[in-house]
Amino acid sequence: MTIATWNVNSIRTRLPRLLAWLERRRPDIVCLQETKVEDERFPVAELGGLGYRTLACGEKTYNGVAILSRSPGTDIVRCLPDDGADAQRRILVTTIDGVRIVDVYAPNGGELGSPRYAYKLEWYRRLRAFLAAAFDPGQDLVLCGDLNIAPDERDVWDPEQWRGQVMCSEPERECFRALVGWGLTDALRMHQPEAGGLYTWWDYRAGAFRRNRGLRIDHILLSPSLAKRCSAVLIDREERKGARPSDHAPVIAAIP
Image (tube, rainbow, N blue to C red; front, side, top):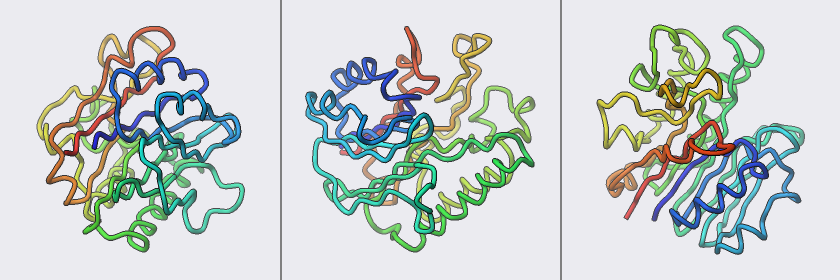
């Protein structure tokens, strides 16, 4: 199994790039975030032409998650347990070929001390509670997506400049550690524990990508059974280049 995660920053804007990337990489499962489209307007037919089935949980203009797969998904969950009908579309869960897939687009958080920051921390508390109530770390499980957290200083181009800023604050990093502590492994760090300069997001401004001024905020977390099988993890930086890219690069894990 090859599984990828990618914040596409609008599925309709990025569809030509996504289709070309799918033809080139041919992953088995792709978790998308920030699709920014209602489910009825999701490009199901175009993706089906490449052999991908689609599960979507979206909304107009903002947020949205989707899972593309060659095999059908079952046991689908489209929200956290206490979400209301108008909740932001940020999570999608399914089982594909016996593997439980949890696709997440975490809140950004805005600025420290803001209502959006408080919402982010509370949302992570609810996600962690959902994991504990609904899953078992002994099962085959992948939690992946744009988590909007750079776990430590290796994951930030300038730790001093970002210290205490949103996506790098200690309360947010504690949220990430709580996910890992439940029984998950950061797949990339399992293979490259010390390497710096490995980022998945670069601001569109000030030549950030060209200067490699980025953050690693997109992650693939694996339960122990899958971590043992994971043979490689790649950040596909090529997809941040060229015309009209997303500001995120895909992350791909190979799990034989």
